[in-house]
Image (cartoon, rainbow, N blue to C red; front, side):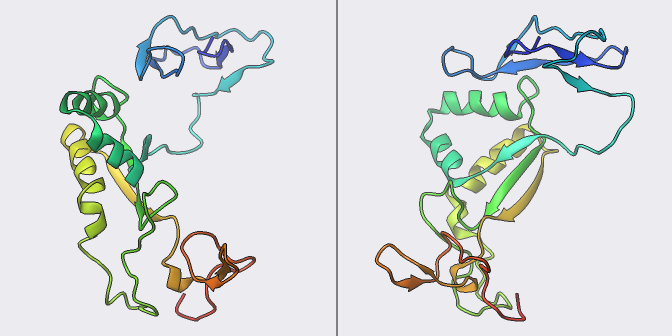
Length: 198
């Protein structure tokens, strides 16, 4: 059974090595390895079961990981040095879950302390004013990324925007009723301004 008491079913008879980790608010478990999780290989009732067919590959998994947001990086910096080391080992170390991928939001996201963009110059479609030093990320996100890399130098990263800069978006009505361009919220049905550059 899995940690929720559900039976886990594997269709293959091959032996599969795996580890199970649990994080549960009502217990002291925080990425704690648990034992005694069984795998049912019988073909009895499949109601409430998850079937994993490992006999044929249908897709490629590049890795598992999480997002390196402003919130996670800021909270990480507030931890003591000792707890930071434990955190890093549990997420990125060989003895932990060993994350192999990380998503880095470009500009601010819904887990940022404030709204920001790396190019706030209106109509800068050539990105002449793009902050190539990603200044905002230098104090929190980038140090966390570097520490993760120090434990797992093979971790892969990809950057993705949560929102384009405000100047690329159609105005929306703010709380006062004024129409403003903002990274928060999008006009419906078309969020981006109508221009051939986008």
